[in-house]
Image (cartoon, rainbow, N blue to C red):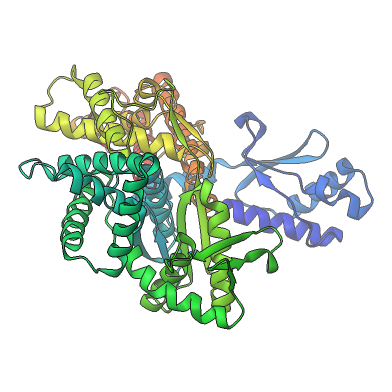
Length: 573
C-alpha cells in the first residue's frame, strides 16, 4: 500500500466518523513543497452534506486525523478555505529511500493487475505504404502502455494489426506494374521507401485518371479474391519486403510483437459474420450495401457502411473479424486495448458497438486509446533532405541531429557514438510524443527536443548518465552508500518516493505523460541538489555516503521511469 492509499483510507475513516461516508474527495501534492507533501479537499467536499462551514469541517477532520496517530505524518495544518495539508515525517523518507535502494529495478512495480490477461494492439503500419508519423506515435504510446501494464503484474500480449489489403495495396501494385520494381541490390528499407513512392504515384493516378482508377479497382478486387497470378506474385513479394522493412524500424524503437494480425484474414472472417447478423437484424441493407445504424443503440453514434455494394468489407467490418481473431486466440482475455489516431475515434466507436451487438460478452473488454497529430515547429512537413516526412525519416533525422550535437564528446569511439546518437534521437522523439496528454496534438522541434537542457528526453538521459558517473567515482573512492536518517530531508527526497503512485495514475488513465512530467521534476530536483551539495567528498565520507545513497535512489527512479516510457537510460553520453 502506497502512502497515498494509506492517507486516503485515513481521510475516508475520518469522514465516516463525521457522518460524511462516501463523499468523493481528492488527495494531491501541493505545487509548492513548502506547503506540505499532500493536500486534501475533503472538508470542502463534505461541507454541504454536513451543513457546516468548510473551515469548521476541516477543524473536525484535523482532530480526527490526529487521533488516528498516523506514524508517517509529522504534522497537519489547515490552509486556505479548508484544505488540509499533510507533512510527512523524516522517518518516512528514510524508510522510503531505503525501499528504493532495496527494490532496485522493480521499484515502481505493483500487483494491481495480477491475474489479468491483457492484449494491446499498436503501431498498425500498412504494407506497401510508408511508415508514417501516426505509426510512430501509436508505437511510442502503445509500447509505453505495454510496459506500464506489465509493471502492474498483468500477463500482456503485444500485437500488431497491419493493413495488407485495400485500395492502398492496389495503388502500389499499379505503380509497380507501370514503373517497375525497385532495384533489388538496394537495402530492404530503401526498396520499401521506393514502393511507398510508387504507392503515392498510383494514388495520384487514381484521383486524376479514370482509366487508372478502373484498373486499380480491378486490382483491388483481384487482391482480395486471389484470382490473378501476376498480381498475386507482385503482392506476395511486396508484402514480404515491406513487412521486413517494418521489422527494422521496430528494432530501432525497441518493440517486439508477440503476434501479428492482418486485414486480409480479418476480411475473410468479417464478410460472413456481417451477412449472418444482417439476417438477425443487427445490420441493414442500403442501396446495395450493408450498413450498421449505430444510432439505434447509442444516439452519439452514426450509420456506417460495413460491406460495400461490391461485397467488399470496409475498415469497420474488418474490426469485427479482428475481434473474432483476438478472442479466439486468447479466449480468457480480460481486456483488449487498441491505440489509434484520435480521428478514428468515431469510426472505432461504431465498430465497437457492432461488435457488442454480435458478442454482448465483449462489452467492457475493449478499450480505445487515442493520440493526436504531430507537426514540425518549422511548419514544413518535409524532412531535412526535402522529402515528405514519414515516421522513418523523422527517426533518421532525429538520429542525425543527435549525432551532430554529440560529435564533440571525448573518449567515445565511432561505434558507441552512433549507438548513443540513436538512443538520444529515439529518446527525444518518444519523450516529445509521450509528454503530451492522450489525444493531444504535438509540435516537434528538433533543436528543443534534442536538447540536453530543459523539458526533453535527452535531458533525462544526460541526467541519468551524470548519476552513473557519480556512482562510478564513489566506487573508485571507496565511498559505500549509506542512508543517514539524521540528515535533513532534501526537496529531491520528497519526490522520489512518488514513482509507484505516478505509475498507478498513468495506468488508470492510460496516460504515460504522468510519468514523463514526473521524471523531469525528478531530474530538475537532482540537478539542483547536485549544484547545492558536494556529493563526492573524501574528507567527509559519512556525509558523502548519505548523498551517494540519494544519488543512487534517484538513478533507480529515473532509470525505471525511462524504462516505462520505452526510452533507453545510457550510463555514458
